[in-house]
Amino acid sequence: MANASGGIILYGIDEVDGCASSLTTESIPDSDQVIRRLAQISQDNIEPALRVSFSVIDVSGYQVLAAEVPQSFSGPHRFKFNEKQRFVRRYDRHIADLTYDQLRAAFGGAESRLARIESWWKVVDASAYFARQLRPGPSMVSALVPTAYDGRTSFLDPKRVEQNWSDLMMTSFGGGSRSFNYHGLSVFPGARNEPVRAFTQAERFGPVLTWWSVEDLRQGRDEKWFHGAWYVRFLSESLRTQRRVFERHGIGGSFFFFSKFQGLQGWKMIEDGGIFAGDPSDGTADCVEIGPIFIDDVHDISTSGTEVFTDHVDRLWQAYGQASCPQRYFEALE
Image (cartoon, rainbow, N blue to C red; front, side, top):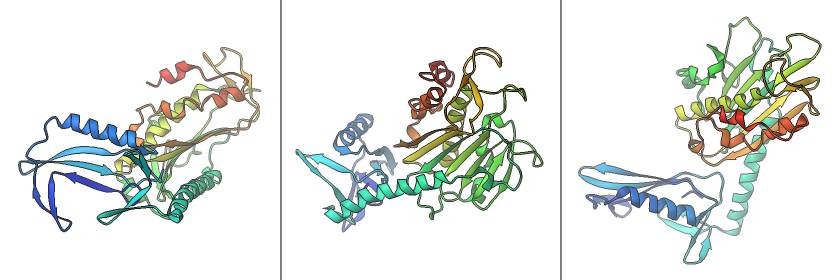
């Protein structure tokens, strides 16, 4: 099913010629244990790992166990049984082994999807979403993109997104406004006549993107400083905001997460303390980029999302001559 279009397997229902005929199970003793056992079996015997959701449904005094199998975009998957390993696919009510051509297409399809997503990410231009000026200076940008993105299929309806447009507001916005554009819907802080300093963009073809302009800690003095902790907080809050939009619209499964801190040339990083505490560090890169980071199931991410990007944030500190991002910045988000 995962290698096809997904589906739901129901236990506790008899069938005749493929149609449900009667309920057979009045109760499932210790259903939690049964679900844990089935989840463990699927986890141990399917690769790459596949998230199968199990639930018990009460129907007219009977119980039905449902196993929901998502269509996978990280396959093809194979299963192990009786010391054999097979790539199979379900066709109507029977299964068959994938042919050589089908396997080649499946592996190639995953690579081409990622290539399309990376191609979109490389040409993202924040100014394309607004007719007025963006605040100048370095900026942080991140995006959460469904692995099923193909640049043609609509995932989000901008008019439906507008019904709950506050979902796109990061808590640090402190309020917001919204506007439609060619790509979808943008939500941003501040009044409509001010330069844009931040926004979240929900695109109809799948990505939800967040952009934030960095303000100078030195406030116009000879040197320009930023605080390294800003990037950690931005990644956590933007990922939480992006995920909230997809969850509102019932879109789950696997995603890619991208981020970059750009326009850093000539700016120094202050790592600790207040505005003038500690020694600022000179950087060696104009842009620090992370991703694509593969997220197998977006529902499994913690509220802070730190497990997604913790291993990657060190790149910013290393670009400024230091070994790693201080752990306390991540702990502050928990």
